[in-house]
Length: 277
Image (cartoon, rainbow, N blue to C red; front, side, top):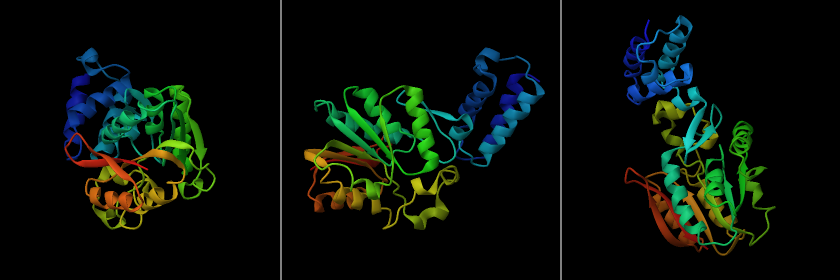
């Protein structure tokens, strides 16, 4: 059997999943299994074992299992980061939030930056890559996610300090007036919508997705309790859900922050905010 026959079979299987970009994903899986792009193999024969493996992966995608977890690696700002079950998948929307944070960070001299709820470490690593002179710390509670965080720091060879800790406790031990910028993409999905979330998202860790108080628990806690951690005129950068703009804005203004910038993602949806102490 030639590679293109398998490619067509894979596409037919994955097209049954409305969330799958079947052609793109089939090419990604072929390169993952065979080590070469499909165009380089065009009419090449494929072993039965490889064909079965590819069709197995296509079936997993049909059932909604994330492509990123199958591949085990996903790009974020041109960095190949390890991902898998137990850690949130880095998304392009978060790149948009990072870009807004970069605008603030580049104006600071030798800034100190803390990434709360770091997960894979994508935000912390992007900050360190963008601003090598920054002192960056990544805080993560989950055992599974923390393993990916450490692995990605080692893989990228970027100097980021890792903190295994709960953000609901870390504010009590970090020095006051010590941080220039706090960035966080916390859990923010309202628990009531759990039955309706996209199948792919349901495979990601619940503790990285859902938050009490209608999804606003982390915004309230960080805005209030980490305010003392920020230096005078320090910055707080949040990612949030598309329908949480006004709620998060209200929380920030009530805690005495000035809204510097509202962040809009590539789809034109509200995605985050830059606020200043």
